[in-house]
Length: 474
Image (cartoon, helix red, strand yellow):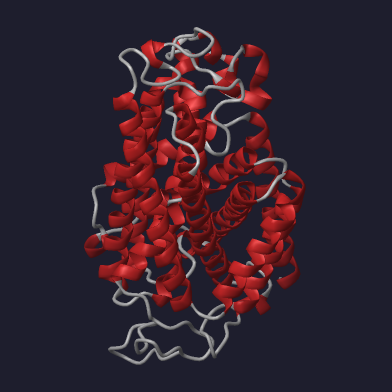
């Protein structure tokens, strides 16, 4: 790579990769689209329903908490990306600002968290398209198809993401409008299945329903919220249930920084990356908050199992809109999840590329295609890992919780790294990084015990691998 005076590392000509490097081909619009495509998916089509199952009428508050934490994390990521415009995101930032071990922990957390995210998105797609016996096979085929798109160039990824996110946004806007019309047309006092302030079983909407109901769920399955009696309406339990709902909603926001992992492929990264991250986050935060309010107005989930993996399909049925409207939301859900999966695979492979360059993953993964300027080996390995998880995972919500664990730790390290920045690189006040760090740790603590233990085990496996590699090198 050219490191001559006056030409910063990685500042090669637009669209022309150097040997073993990537090309700067993404402008602001494409960067925003990739960020939107990474977020719009689980948020509207899975997490919003799960948040209401956990927090009831307080679900919009959970969305707001997740948005605030995401905003703080986004400003930290944008600030770091402006100083270090290279592929790898917080893996690279952590190495530069805190040291190699911090960078490794960030990168490893991102990889395991986002592989879980990819599996969740693939399972959502298949759930809308085919019945249960064929869902895992179809999900695996979807993963392989979208990995194939990524293999032929980042501009094609951005082009397909643009189409998918447009379809998803249109479907969400139309669905939201139809729900509002259905609520307005309902007779007074019967706006939805939960109208009048109580659910189908007569419980108050302020009592947390769903999987946390009752202390018996225990720390392992329900987390601290269940132990403190979320299902009985206790203040501490309800508060923790809202925080846990926010942790699941954070999964839906996490794509805002996907563009930071494409730092070597963005034109004018110091200006483009911060603007793209904040713009994409703002658009999605407003959308999620509005949809959450509409879902609460429709009322508590009509069934004992909660809203399930397709909350807006159930909501449309609750207001008497079926048939064609079910097709609209299905098309939107598939497009949104496919767009998220497409961008997620790109982000995971770029982090693996950066980790391989740093010697924290096998060196062959650092090689990129000279023809398409993409890390093809990392893309293939990521695809294989996602397919395996799709075939082995239990359900979508478990994958979402696992993803939240890894991604929250990833952003906690990003906030730590941003706290060390000085001078011209400090673009946002330190209090935002402090709030972001505290928020990430609080949301992790609210997750079910099984998720936390499994995540810690995976982290320890990564630490052991790196320790062995370092010992062998010495």
